[in-house]
Image (cartoon, rainbow, N blue to C red; front, side):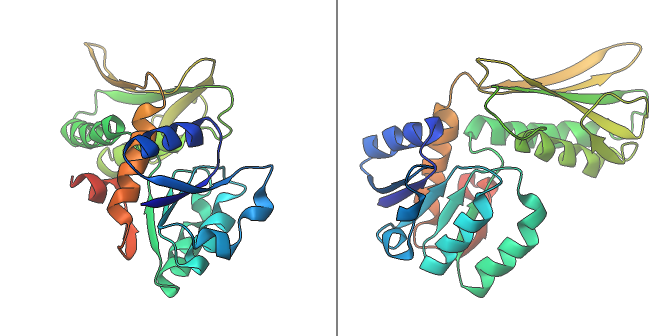
Length: 238
């Protein structure tokens, strides 16, 4: 499989290493120093594009992939206010997209665990729930896309919480997400239910980028030759 890497930072290098070990070929590498090389002609050399840049460039990158007819795996976060526009653009051009806020297999299992726990806790009003996420200082969005996914899962099931907020508050209807940026920290997410009697807490801690990169390559293998919009639940068969 021929892969275009849109975003060639630390994550892009790790994706390249894993992809090459699996027998794939990297035919295009785009970073801030060579954005002029991201042409439709160059994109069409690839079977799949893997996009890990940032919220300021992700939408345009996705649109170019759809125009080129190249399936794309997107791991950029912070742009989902444009989600409806992107899905419409993708469908109109018979495109292919896998989007996930986190490609780690462990995190996606954690998503399932979080959903199940929130369903168990929905009838126990004596528990309050809060969240914490810790990442490296180069991460530009806060809260993380993974934290937002986790929060939205909780909001779907715990009716006492009406919205998430990214700062401490004294309002029982708001789900607090505390964001910390420290180095080195590939990523930690905590969900804690607290009562006067006890605490229930689930935690996922990433030790490195390998899990994220490996999941992105797996998603690329999944979407190659497919049409439509998919998530990691589709990739993993969850």
